[in-house]
Length: 169
Image 1 (cartoon, rainbow, N blue to C red):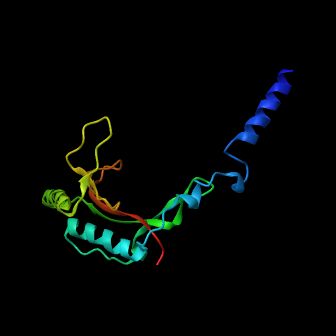
Image 2: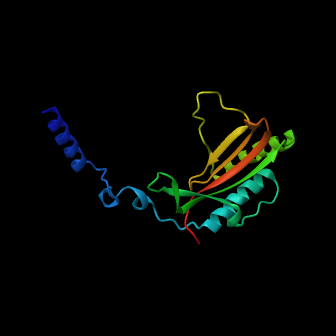
Image 3: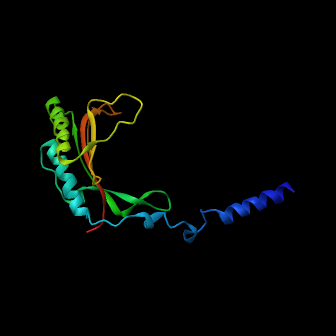
């Protein structure tokens, strides 16, 4: 009797569950149906994020989308990021930077407030490091500066900028 009840309950759960075995059984809110259309293109996003990184490190950064990282905005069947659309990311990693460069980068990221950026709140339990700043604007761009020693013992300045989701050109 116990096995019959278990089989009945399992069958009932599978048949009434919102998680089916087939793609057509899934609710419409998953995957591509949840992505909002955007007019932002990968080329425009690459140019913008390159500009942010260039402004902070005070040196030219190639805006060519071929040099940018593209991170998928969707999740595929294996729960991995997939695109299009893409978040476009550029960064500059400077090993053993002089303290003047670190101070200048931290000062320059603060100027993003004048462009409508707001600080990203620190949510970790340990105190916020003074050399780790991140800002986000209302469009979804995120710009960060971090200076510190990594696990390999290398002191570096990492400046990165990431766009909101952008469509292929």
